[in-house]
Length: 220
Length: 220
Image (cartoon, rainbow over all chains, first blue to last red; front, side):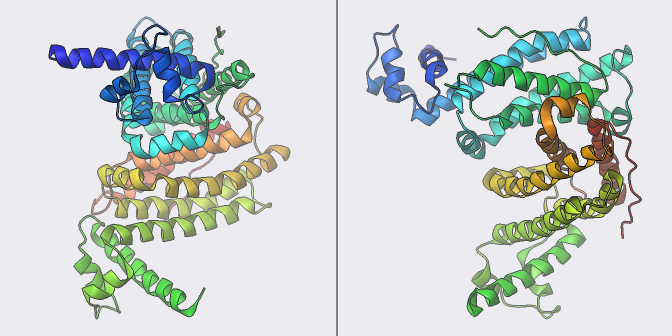
């Protein structure tokens, strides 16, 4: 990367960090570009032309937020799945805080389903790319847990194999997560997020045939 | 509908029926428009200009095939789900032949994943529309089976509710179905389709906590 392109990445990343902080308060849909550029530069703000030098539009900024956020989420989850010392429950306990943050952040960015589908219709490959990065380590982790009798050999695993089960886990999870309405600005947001985590853990328990406990979730 | 638009629909429908028959032999990707128009009119063929009077392109024809095919699939499945006399296993036995046909036809149209994602990226709303039409009758059927003790009250159903479970069934099914490679022209197609039905039934059994038998599947 040249100095120039690395400076560009750094500036874009400042916009992303600032935007995510501003979105947290009232959701991306209710946040104007003006709100974001005013919050830049430690609250001293930058000019609108600076924004347009680095981004094509508000949608471009939102896309950068999604990609940045999901990339770090995937990295964290993959690290946990690759740790050979963890049991299923321990891996779940470690993954859950990242999952909660991911649900929360996606909700903040896509306050309602229309925004989400709108994004998906033009960026389905982005989401799919992230899901694919998780499938491989997840199926390897399932194989490892089966070998160690940490996971029961269900009829489903015998019929479909661990890779298909990994896909079912990932698809079911995104179905549960995206099913809820937007939580940004919702006074019940903590309860909404907790409920989706409980549903996800219940789904994994049922699918794997292994009782799993929903981890305690601290939501600041 | 005016006579003119109904004539138009009838002509389009003749193209769709013919195309699906031709696709069956070697898959949509390996079928040229010329193959389709030659097979029209009981094998006497029509001119290319006739085709372009009714369709914009081969993609437009493929889209019409998908919509026609899925609409009839959804109608059949919804009818079965709404029949109050059927048990879970009976409903599954009745749905499976339609499911097999759907898997087969989608494979014939989208011989490989690239074609499928390409279609989805511009038509995600079409697929989603069809899935949505099934969710409502499916969750009502689950409620009915629970009331009759035909289905166990699992932890998952208690935590997530029947509507979320219906979504999980639909999403998991499309994940299993779309996971395989194209079957058109594959000498193993019967085995591929049978395997996916076995995986789907295994998935439903595990998710619902109810042992279900894969129905006998006649594949002509």
